Length: 391
Image: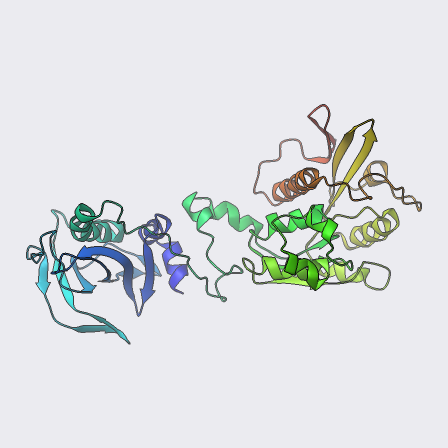
């Protein structure tokens, strides 16, 4: 509950988002990495501990202007004790296994407005002597914040959303599950983007192995050791992206009649395949289930000594599905073009994935959607994006 409490309280959240080492221990506010000077005129780092006044899991105005400190006796730059703020120097066990050695008292006119005001005021009193000895010293070190598994799908907190104050908007992306079918290039970039969204489960479907040519179309940089493992694409990607998202679920199989019904169990599907026959099977299954999906595709041609290309993003929802057959090739003969021959076009893979994820975010209400287009085509040579099939 520690990080939930911080996220709900504007003053604590501000401390965290500005890079202070903030946590809650036994109903006390604990702030680490506080620079100060000891009696030997050495720069050290201590910890401030404050009482925490709450109402319904949200902070109120601090009841107490006193704050406690774990560390040596704090001094000015010459090693003289900061007697103006030191109240007592005795050991207090404020939490199990957590002791402080000093307490400070400094009350501004009108008291402290909130815990941000209180904490930063005391940090300034302690850090100023340290910064006079070392101007590079600071209390904002942006330590990684581990997320509790019961509170977040992420391994560490999404402080990007809170810093931008779009937490309410980001919450619109919370959904039980999505699937990405096909992780050859575009699908891998889709995973890169959606792994930063608060989706409970991300399912990956692809039966192919991760080979050397794939590394040049994937996000990130695969190592030689990664390639030597010859794992499947989904197992390789799940291993990498579990570093940020706890629930990346690999399915090292290609979708066919025997397993397509697994897609009925997710809330949204990204289809990133170049096999028309399989697409037709997937589309029929998702349409029957009333599930939304985005299909990605490219048309790449080698003309003389350069490539011409189109990047297509086609969406299907309950509001509009009748355009799919006109926009996506569903013929039995899977035509071979330069894309299917693995020409290295990671930038177009990334663009295709980005357009698909933006459209998904529009459907979720994260972005405004003025045109509600269900098909868009980007022309590489003309740098032109067209919108079609509005719902």
